Image 1 (cartoon, helix red, strand yellow):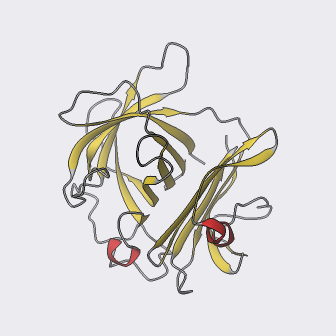
Image 2 (image 1 turned 30 degrees about the vertical axis):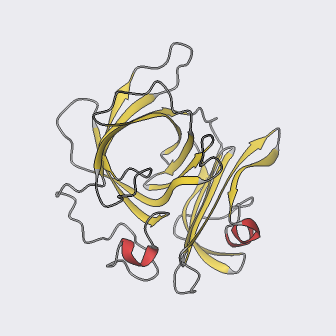
Length: 256
């Protein structure tokens, strides 16, 4: 099981100068195998306390570039706060049971393609760092149709061996939209596109208790997106029932 928890250090929209840090937005991404959830929240400035951007879906490896250390990846956003679910991938089956089966050919570059390159660790930390480069819409712009070159610097957060890991994706056909709930060690993120209403939360375990970091959507977010506490006996591909809806287990187990 390939698992990571990454926090963004900075973002640069080319050709602007690189930032030393990213003080206005708190970004955390949980990844397990090919599935990911991503929540980005303004923590200062006029938009403080609102979502800058959020998405969840699948990340797939692309053919090697031939440059040592580079890892090309394609992101397929099954849900996206800025794009209503019905228009995101119109050729996906209604249940989204296999979101990687899109009309995109893996050999054809798209704006969702990025390259990850390793960076030196910080002087006071041995945590892996890497640069992500590619093109995507700038969420601070009114034009979300134009893809702009960007560079993001990420740091991988330490994760203890044997930490619990679970990724669930809601099954379609219930008229309730699409949702993900994920936990990696002491971090948990829930995301849902409830037919045009975007719900999200992020929690972290502190001294054995879950603490809310961000919460969007009020009681509906808590009711519609469960935080998974018990996953004994679950295996990848199982379908489980939680809080009135069906979920497919995309991953369940412990980190290496």
